[in-house]
Image (cartoon, rainbow over all chains, first blue to last red; front, side):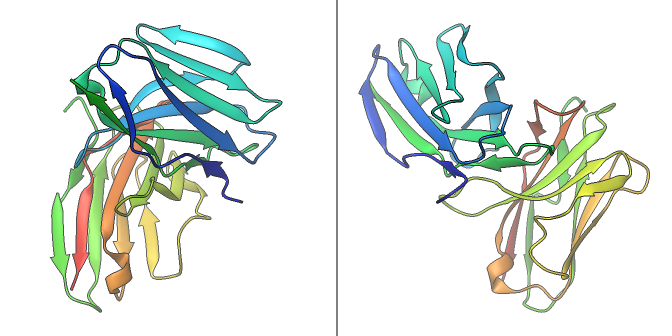
Amino acid sequence: QKEVEQNSGPLSVPEGAIASLNCTYSDRGSQSFFWYRQYSGKSPELIMFIYSNGDKEDGRFTAQLNKASQYVSLLIRDSQPSDSATYLCAVETSGTYKYIFGTGTRLKVLA
Amino acid sequence: GAGVSQTPSNKVTEKGKYVELRCDPISGHTALYWYRQSLGQGPEFLIYFQGTGAADDSGLPNDRFFAVRPEGSVSTLKIQRTERGDSAVYLCASSFGPGEQFFGPGTRLTVL
């Protein structure tokens, strides 16, 4: 089992719709979770981080964490073509400052 | 500069050669990370520095890879006897502490 799993996609959604991106992780002791966006040929940029169970909202983005199910998700409301990118989930290995990334989900927002 | 910088942006070398990749983190950031990213994959952790010391080098694939950060700022990733399988984008990231990391633009290494 991979430490951090994401569906590689592509996930295609129409403009204006909600995009839902999912990530599962294996380290039950992990406490910190991050979502990065990576455009083709560019480096990752941080979108959101979440440490506590529940929802965290920032503009059009909502991160959701369920530690019991070892599941973290990212919702993008009112999706725009400019949101088309690969979204990477990163999880901090418990007891360390080492971050494990998933393979990323490619999102396509169709105009 | 305001962000993390990496040099060179591209490096082409021949199998068996030695290469050095440089990372200049955001001023004041004490933590520095090196990752390697292959096409279609997420960044793969290599090493993490807190200050001058390597706090975790468990991701370095073998003893051909080595990294230093002598003054707690700039870091150099060194690869000896390069192999074709070392070809990837090498990313550096820095942070003020644990948590949010800011990535540099990466160095694309091609080993012929």
